[in-house]
Length: 316
Image (cartoon, rainbow, N blue to C red; front, top):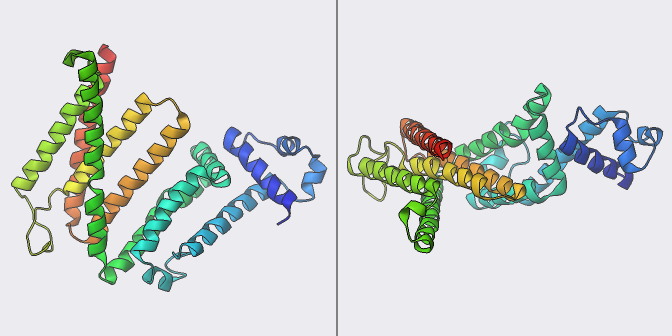
């Protein structure tokens, strides 16, 4: 692809990301490029042609990155052997690299912004958004995990998600530290931010629920862990992740002013949470109902927390 054609794609995508696809005309693209519409038409037939080439370019970049990180470039139907031969190490490296790529790379970032902006305006854009950023990646990872389970490496995934389950505990400690600092500086519990107080009470309730289900098992894991029959309902890791990580997003939205930083953290937290829940499900160390129970219970607890925060904010 010539430099001129490549530049047209980049400028057009930037305009689509800022204004939305429908709001941008060929004239606007040509003006931004400093060329006439006639000169632009020598390279692309129309705006739809430019858009189609942008999507194709994004697919090419994605396939190139998949090949670079030694993960499947296509669907499991097309390349089943690639899914069978993918290692947890290459998948983990690729996953974190992709999060960074979609946030920091200019072309990928503008592509993501365009899809987010247009997903509710255009059915085809919504389908593309789901394919590229939501259902597509989830199905891709799920297919890889399924093949890993068939090879008997699900315990590796269990170990990884088990250690990563410490992340929500670290989040709790961070906000506990914020509350403690405020208490020391302001010398009164009543002068500590009300949302931090509510958050502390909420975390206490979550930990209490976690402890109760560990002490009084309702269901046991389908397999022994190091020869021990452990409690499985609800999935404690799922409970902690989905109770605590959404509060991180909520607090970030409340306390930070930089939109880019808030967006990066939000995307990372959502991706991490999805990875953890799917990882626990695919690892095979919980019954499906245990995962569902953890999701439902955590959603209920977080909903109550949000309601209390909203009432507290309204009364201030």
